[in-house]
Length: 274
Image 1: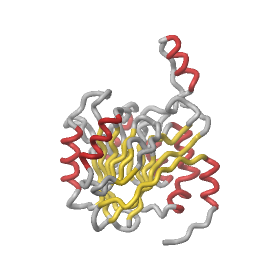
Image 2: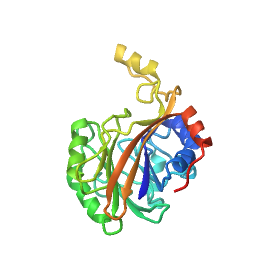
Image 3: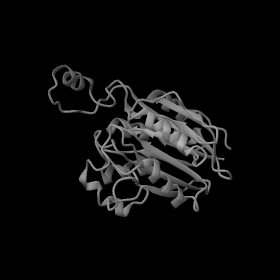
């Protein structure tokens, strides 16, 4: 079996600090073979920089995915030509920097295809994700039996539909973007692990990662506000997926919602080797 860890949208410094303090412990505790993370909010909540990408790689992330905030920091654009482990939604128009897929070698030697796509409902218009994702699967399936999809989308209905669309075609399809972890994690009938939204890794006493006061003031007045990343109650949201490398199907999916204290306990808890 191959154990995959996917980390939900990393929010600013609080999210990065959670990985610094806890990613090694989680990986050891769950015998993780490959770590994937959505990083599009890791630079103060908006975008990602090359420096932050290097930082997250150093903490133990192997592949990074994105979404609608991928391009917020312009210095990241040339980085895509240098770093294939950072991908962006595959259904951006032709000519957009970077790729929407990457085949990574997990710690156990198994090849894993990682695909990133983005929804269209309540989002900026892009190419059809339901068609594009099949093209991306075809592009990696000769190299990788296990295929993982990060679907960055707003609408629950679109994510649920994508899960059924991909059931039996990929090992896992997980939703990102809303920053609120859903409780519908399960393995679909044909073997695809699914969750509507993994949630966020960052400050949970906030409004989806942003300081509460500014958001409430905007709702009360309708006036623009400067959004600052919150700091209170940092928690790591993610999922652990166990996949069979011979069939390419998932055996189970487990939600993670961990505080700093829980991560610290995990770091000192003995782990039984596989």
